[in-house]
Image: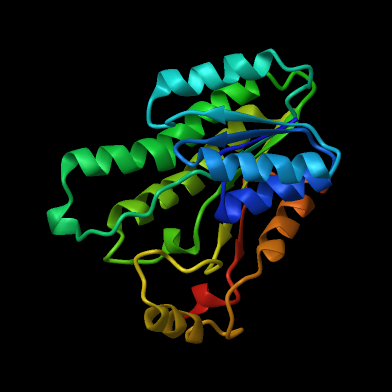
Length: 235
């Protein structure tokens, strides 16, 4: 079984579908997007793969714990965790409120840690954890300061978990570039961003999920963050 957080829509949905195509039963996490999650679940079922929805606000540690207790009732062995859920709020660093900082960090950084702890304790036969970072982790996007800090933390967390959980569990991260337009951007702003990419286009979802498949198959990679950004990090 594979647990995919934030799997109702956008990249999380594509990751869940890709894992299903690889034959993994899917524990599909969502928070408020139940209708989208159910649509994703039905598409997974159409592939002949089992899928279950688990609703939780990952900012609440007790709800994370409850998810994994519910997963225990399923008949599958947990082999893969993909931490995809995150939020990207706009702000300016001089104005970031403590409660907003804490909320974003709780979802983007603390939740991957707690999910990894619970998952690792259930991976008796070994497994793989993949964290979804962002090319912005190594940028100074002044309009998204907490998001940038949280994703930089995810990459550090990835290395620390990889060393702590070896040799039985491998931990890696993927840092996508631009895949889907942010809801905060106009079409013109999105086009300007894409124009800066050396390959001159946004990523296709399958170009991100293909790296996940690569990391699952190559069992000699751990503690790494693979950047899939069309060269944007070179700009």
